[in-house]
Image (tube, protein in one colour):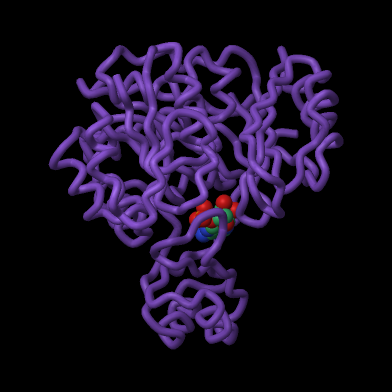
Amino acid sequence: MNIGVLGAGQLGRMLALAGYPLANRFTFLDTTGHPSVGIGEVIIDTDQKHLASFLEQVDLVTYEFEHLPVPLVQAIEEHKPVYPSSEAIRVCQNRAEEKALFDRLAIPTPAYRLVESAVELEAAARELGTPVVAKSVTEGYDGKGQAVVKDPSEAVEAWRTINHPRLIVEAFVDFVREVSIIAVRGRDGEVVFYPMAENQHVDGILRYSIAPMPDLDDGVQQTADGYIRALLDELDYVGVLTLELFQTRDGALLANEMAPRVHNSGHWTMDGAVTSQFENHLRAIQGLPLGDTAARMPTCMVNVIGREGEAAELLALPDAHLHRYDKAERPGRKLAHVNLLAPTHDELLERVRACAALLPDAPAPRFSFD
Ligand code: AMP
């Protein structure tokens, strides 16, 4: 099976690494001119002239990046199966569509308003009560295209900074922790769920994910499973879907956003789960049985951002697994991650702190249960 992947970054790289044991081959279509995948065949298509040769080579198509023109994906669907479908991309690349879907499926979210001017932004800030978070409805990722408005008088400045014709304005959630749920749906509609992860973001960028959480109530996991199952079934989805949520003091979950793909908060599964998110995505899209999602041990994923540490020092940590993306160092750039495993959460936190100390610029790890 030759799998076509739209996008050619580290997520595609890790998909391919998981697919080689299944005798999959990979052809990546890169529209940016800066592929970093480093393996498989890469077709650089900045001028939109190579789609036909990409389609000739592949049996089915998936993606590692959802900010793609929907008409392009729809055109590909005319020729080859695309999993997840273009409908998933259409919804997930637009925060307004995403929130409307959450509302329709009764998945709770922070209170929000859609605005199309600085005046409307100011009114929304007054109505919702500050602080609010304003986000461009499209093209935002890793905290880009966002601003926290602490007072309605800051609306004009925020509108100017974000510089986008349509924003979603959300009440600021005083969360206890940020969590994510990753699930996989097969072509036959079978769904499996990974244990939820607790995620620490700094400046909008994920730094640490830990799973399973030591203090997670079964009922909360089941609630999250129910939310993501509703999304998967509604979209007739095939593959891995990620839903990021806020957990509030009373244990409730509020959906923040979703990603129609393998996700950074699921990288822990590469070493910490029986079957990784990458392998399960490939199993799903090829109509193969889905693998066990159970965690082997408490696991923490530590992102390596901006500058790399010494590989030899990181690998000397017990049960540490370094996954490098073979990318050049640049501030804010995701370069690698380290998965750390330990028999108990206490030992795991010790290893996480030791790992953070080896990484230049790593923020202090902070977990809600620590
Ligand atoms: P997003 O791009 O929507 O995932 O936002 C990036 C980060 O900003 C999140 O991971 C949160 O840390 C923070 N954030 C986003 N929306 C809110 C909100 N409504 N309330 C509090 N924090 C938020």
